[in-house]
Length: 311
Image 1 (cartoon, rainbow, N blue to C red):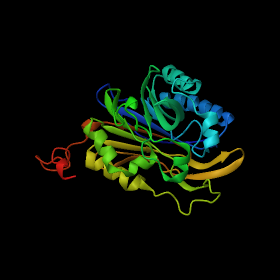
Image 2 (image 1 turned 135 degrees about the vertical axis):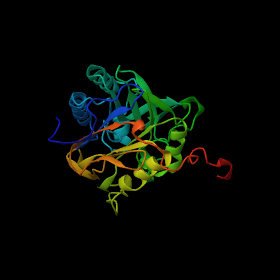
Image 3 (image 1 turned 60 degrees about the vertical axis):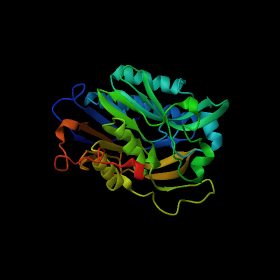
Image 4 (image 1 turned 120 degrees about the vertical axis):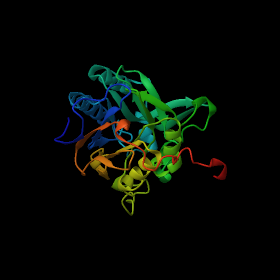
């Protein structure tokens, strides 16, 4: 199930100790979508990638947007495949995390009852190394008309709680965003102000995709991996990671999209720690805040110098 892959790493001799940092892994791969069989294939691959990552000391392993179902779905497919956060698919993910002793960020199609109605969310489950759910994040900023056909935006209702929160993995503050949300600087900034030292962003950035209209997208998705991702890392003095697919995605035997394969992990100086080519890859980097000093002379700090009353 795990295809031939490249391994790109930026590592110390040992994984970071608790409170020191985090060894982050990103799986960039390809797969089927839109069926129960595809979900099972993707779960089996996840379990095998967990074993592979654990062998390299990974402490948090991330997968691309809507990893379990695949990204290209219709409202009918969503209704067929979406599960609750306590459903069997995430139960298998939690078991894999526990078995291999690493946290997992697993994007999935969520079915939930919110404000008295059944709703569907483009969600990310963050599960710790003991198999406990740390956070279920629902995408707030939906891209284009097709996403709006399938999903509700998260955090429109008070019972959902706050949207932008920070969880601790190996003692490091981790915040979650989802795909298009990488392009809103306010979101990464908000997480950094809440204490995130790593902002993790699963995505589905495509070279082309077939829309519900039957037409292909007329241009590749903007490659923000070498522009906005390093910039957001720099302006917030935190690590920012972007986890994408590569290759083609097939729904019921039909190729429906092809992805850029531009996964990347950037450091707090806007530096590139590791970056993928458009091929199956396991990226691994040690995210160590202590390796980075200030970028400006003493007395200058973006967060402290903000004047939010002006904006």
